[in-house]
Length: 80
Image (cartoon, rainbow, N blue to C red; front, side):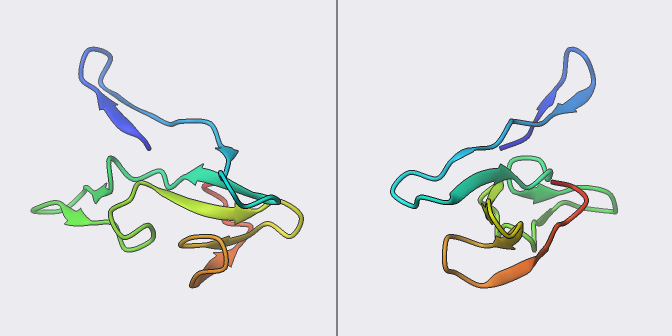
């Protein structure tokens, strides 16, 4: 899950990791900030990850879902 580094004034993104209990899937940083979308008059819960800060990516196909086998979010998103 990404977070804001207030000392250096940047968003820090985490590397992907294997998704425990789901071979062939990995947890991927959504690139929002702690599940919040910024940029506008006020923050909103991220629509891509539902506020979780991460999504699941199928390693072989590159398909992205909310969780392994869950709602399809896209394929080969440029943010990941």
